[in-house]
Image (tube, rainbow over all chains, first blue to last red; front, side, top):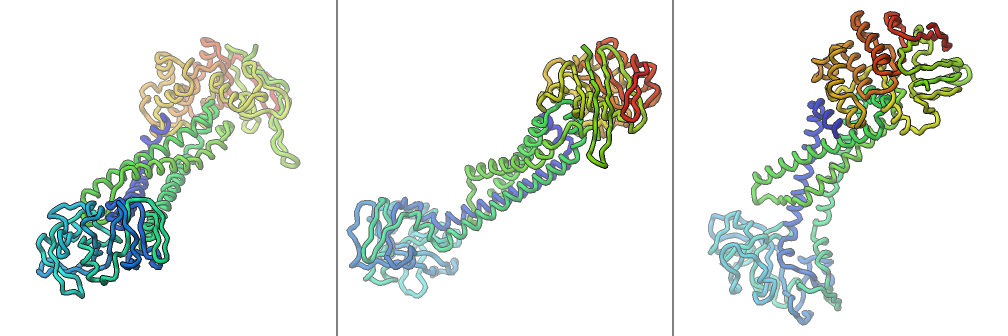
Length: 349
Length: 224
């Protein structure tokens, strides 16, 4: 560590450049991570809030909530923890002029069932009849207010906004909680619901229905898996790029110092001692770069608008920082190889 | 026991038409307490002699004993340890680590060899004798060639080796500094009982030597 610290301190410009590049790459990684988690949360926030374990959908829906329709005749006996959910994409508009049309997901619930009680109300109250709606706080940020009269596109029925709910996002679209009868008003009374969400784990297969674990259901949300994989790939590539950068810089710096290392080898300083210095240098440079990028990312999160789909996870960010440091130490194996090949006799040349 | 002994040492580089014999049947010994000078023109085999005597490479034939140890029978790690504890090299390419100040060059030795190094007082005296005491916080890049060479000498002597091997230690020095280094080498032998072997073509060092060997075309003859 002594040699590593001295080398970093002496080569301030070189070391500063390496740290700056690592910090920038790290910053990019953490921003992508934040977006990945933020977007993922917008896909699943509502479902996570419902504490769902199992989702029952109509068999032909291909695991898609929006394609699923359960007929009244096919409805199984509901048990404790089961809730009927009607889901339909809607376009909402306020009768006043202050709020624009917004796309949203109408989630129709029976107020007596457990799922309705998990909705976190931040202002106002839950729906008490079929004419009342609770809107996502995301829509509140876009201008909707309590007591607003709203209607869905293609319908003349008017509803009253009686509350706002936090974390109400599904498929990256704000959720509108209403009574199941409101949903039935859009889809028809022959349908009981789009799905049954249950806090129980169970399997069910009938001629028209099938139960799925919630993880499988989430993974099949449109674009969810592809989006996460894309972000994960970008993060992985950036980590590899950071590793290559540190390998190239350390190799160049080591090559410049080989004559001095050869003299040290002749004097009996082992290759292991010099190799440890190279690995320690990679550890320090990656560590400082990662810390800087974490700090800058944190400051950025404070400045980001709340509507931006961004979620900063300290445990994941720290895990990625640790990964970057480990990769940096692995990349130090290139200069270590140069040091290992150095012979004491090279001091004479 | 001699500090360094070479028994009928030969060294051949290459094979076939590119075969070069650098040392022919060289026998040499360097006793403790004496300054031995090995002189000869460029290309005579002086450097090969020094690297074999210092265990940096093994001979093609013959035997080398350093402080009673045969480096040819030792592992690389054992040879590293032998050089660290027993040998002090003052090399012509005195490459000092560019990221270390003069003080740090000695601290690095302290890090790998915890005991037996010169005391702070002894180091201060050595640096004063070499005229580099006020350069302690300088980096090698801030020193002249002569200053760097004197730092390299101090660094080689800092681990307090029993044997000092020097390759052209006065190459970059003016006459007064040559006298200082010559006297220092002599003192190391006389006062501290070290075996000092200096390979050089600098005739200005001969007055300080106890023994002088001449090497030409890889053959060594004793002159004094």
